[in-house]
Image (cartoon, rainbow, N blue to C red; front, side, top):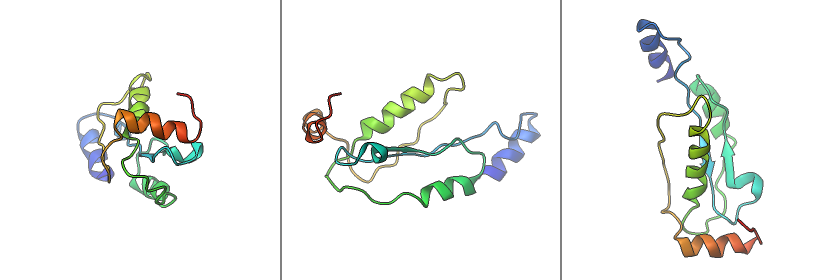
Length: 112
């Protein structure tokens, strides 16, 4: 995919590295601070993203997930000078309800 995107960009007079992708992994509130949100660097090569994903494993299994953490990160990225144009959300569980968020955040004594 990256190779094809690079060719298309070059054919249209754009820098070949104008297309970048970042993977953001969110877990749930029973994950520790360094695991609830894990973010790859921005990449122009699929192999770098694959290497990042090889470091990720299942965590928790506390029902619904903290999708709001992943979306929060996307909003923060959209506020940078480089910004972002798209977000693709892939999940294996539905989002937490507002009541779930309050209850689960309190489990580790986190005040948000």
